[in-house]
Length: 239
Image (cartoon, rainbow, N blue to C red; front, side, top):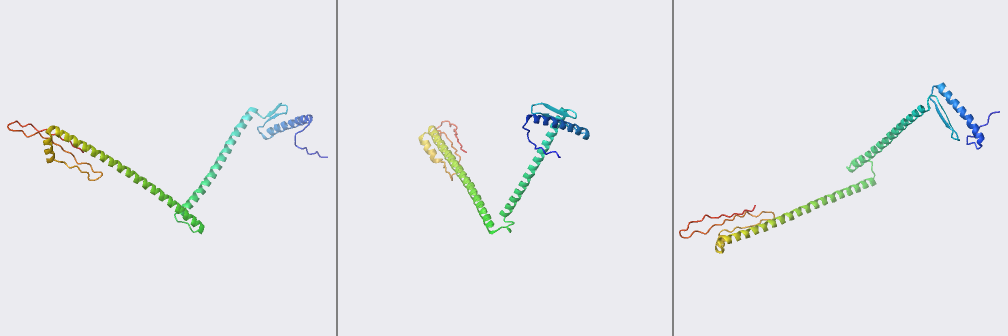
């Protein structure tokens, strides 16, 4: 009569569990030893019982086997990581290539090319998209032109203010020259000199500079036999 099949599960009876552990442990150690001898394999076996006892077998040295195992495990992990990373970048490259193809197709359609396969609805959508894009371009262009006009106006106002300041300085210098003439010649001579040599100051437009101012003071003419005194020249020039 054949032997019945044993269900693989935890044995509840502690005595039976210990007996089974001893039998199967001995058989496992025997198989490991036979495998290392028959096949010239490096075998390492470590067993911990439920009570915490250690049983081991190694064809050479447990430490050398565990070191070799850890090294091989790390290499396998690195290899798997490299393969996984390679697969990831392949998928990314394929997705980017597909996206590039789609963008190129959309660009050609926006340029009016390759429209034969589009329906009326697709053409209407394309037309609406082009109108929206054109509207955005026009709004941007108007904003840039408006900003440039505003900047030019600000520069023009600034230059106008500078011209006004220069004209005020010119008028102040004219008054100072008149006072100097008053002190040197007296009221009567100043009137004659002013009437004989009047300088005109005009500003042709907002951006023209005033004409240079030349002033010359002369000593009164000597009377009778008095020795003439050299003339004193006073000149101011605005540029």
